[in-house]
Each structure stands twice: as C-alpha cells, then as structure tokens.
Image 1 (cartoon, protein in one colour):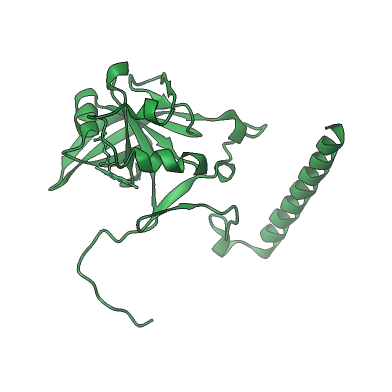
Image 2 (tube, rainbow, N blue to C red):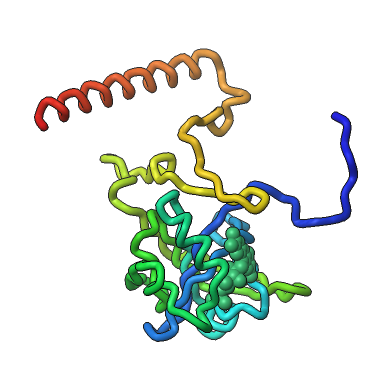
Length: 216
Ligand SMILES: Cc1cc2nc3c(=O)[nH]c(=O)nc-3n(C[C@H](O)[C@H](O)[C@H](O)COP(=O)(O)O)c2cc1C
C-alpha cells in the first residue's frame, strides 16, 4: 500500500457511541453522548469514559462516582446525536428526547429505558489528562431487553441493531458477520458442523415464520 503521513490525531475508528446517564436526583438527571469509551479489564469487568472537564456531566459523574452506559441502537441514533450537542446545563435531555429514566439496581443514577442494554458503573479511579478526565469504572450490573434474549438466556447483541461512530458519522452494524472469534484457526470439521447447525437454525426460523403467518 502507498501511504501519506498526517499530523497526529484521534484517528482510531470505528468507535462505539453510547449515551451515558448520570446525576442522582431527578432534577439533575442528564445524558451525555460518549464515543471515547471501551473495556479495559475482564475480572472484574471494567470500562472507562473519557469526559472533557468542561462538560456538565463531568461534574455530575465526579460528584456521584457513578454512571450508566446505555448502548445505542438505530432507533436511538437521533437522540444520541442530540445528547452530544446540547448541554444538560440548559435543558432536560430525557424530557426533550422523550427518554425514560429507569431506576438502576446498584447505582443512584438512572438507566435509559429505551436503550437495549445498560451497564451500571461505579468509578474506581480518575486519570486526569490534558483535556479530558478518564473515569475508570467497574461494571457492577448489566441489563438487557427481553426482546434480545433467547430461550437459553443468551443476550443476542446481533439482534440489537447497535450503532457505531466512524469519522464523524453514525453507522448501523449490518447483520452479516464475517467470521466468529477464532475462525482463522478453526478445523474444517468444526466449520462444517457449525454451518450445518446454522442451516438447521435458519430452516427452523423459516418454518416458525410460516406457521406464525398461517396463524395471523
Ligand atoms: C458522537 C459524539 C461523541 C462524543 N464523545 C464525547 C466523548 O467521548 N467525551 C466528551 O467529553 N464529549 C463527547 N461528546 C460531546 C458531548 O456529548 C457534548 O459536549 C454534550 O453536549 C455534553 O453534554 P453535557 O454538557 O450535558 O454534559 C461527543 C459528542 C458526540 C456527538
């Protein structure tokens, strides 16, 4: 490949885009859109959000040491953008975007009812950086909407129509996986078994859909 060199920039893409809810009293409930977030540890599960020191939400998270990461789907894309350009200093974003604050289990700030997956987080460490503070946090509870949980209790994130952020634009994630974890070293026999199981699953779904149509 023939490359051109650029000045340093935050050119890591795509990144997740989430709505982070914060504030512990109903009058203070707020939402900030965050793209600078990620997972940093497995046991305990840990994450971070990097928040510019001037944000209204920065004060709320710093004061309570708590926040909720709400994953965003295609339906929430508009609200996600709105919560990333308006400040809770001036407006109530829950009200403006008709989002429902729902009580969390382990933290005092609200979850967003319309989000398919919510991660309750407790701050464990704050790393002060030149423009942002990185709030490192433990994920203390996870909630997923029943519509994306299968009969075995598995969360089907592939059905959640989640979005990501790529160089200034929001993108949906197509339901077309390229491969599964470890597929690069998978034995042919295992591949065949998985493909067979997938075909059977698809067939079952088709039959169920036909049956359902007949009933309607
Ligand atoms: C897609 C997107 C991603 C953003 N990511 C971040 C981020 O990671 N950190 C941050 O401090 N601000 C981020 N922002 C900006 C804040 O969401 C924005 O300034 C918001 O209005 C702050 O709200 P508040 O004043 O109510 O806290 C992002 C905005 C958008 C639209």
